Length: 208
Image 1 (cartoon, rainbow, N blue to C red):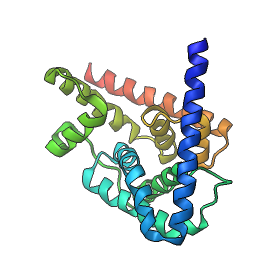
Image 2: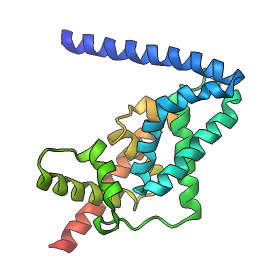
Image 3: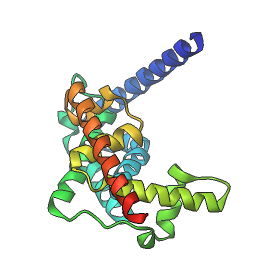
Image 4: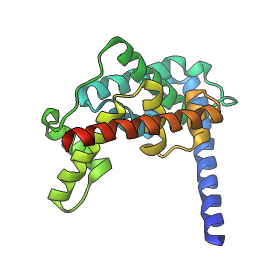
């Protein structure tokens, strides 16, 4: 129990330090756009990974990630710390970019056949890396199947599922990112998980 408390305290201290650093960087970036580069370097990997998990398309992810940071730079003067942390604000912009894209375009058809080596290397770098090549392939297939199921959901369900189970965000963090109340986030997660199970069960039945 003591170790858990100490671990929790360390995480809180680390998060607090990160927020303090972001606050300083944002303050400078509001007056000097070139200073935004530090925030870009810090958050680009996270935002790119999140968007890729929502799209499974490298080229599209590159475009939407660029749009996200361009929008953040353009509107950074309006950003207020009283509302949400800077990182959550970026995730919110990224979420809006993805959802807006899918409002205007069809959801992609995802399969292992559509994945080139760049996709495989990217996924392996943050999802399925393992010394055993055969096991990597199995995990890659599972990853693709899971994300195919996610892409059948409405965008609001895709968002909470990805943030909670792939980005490892807490309920309160998801609430900050989406602007939804914590109770609403929990309800969305419950419905999303239920629909995911139904989809995966149907697919499993068809394969039998």
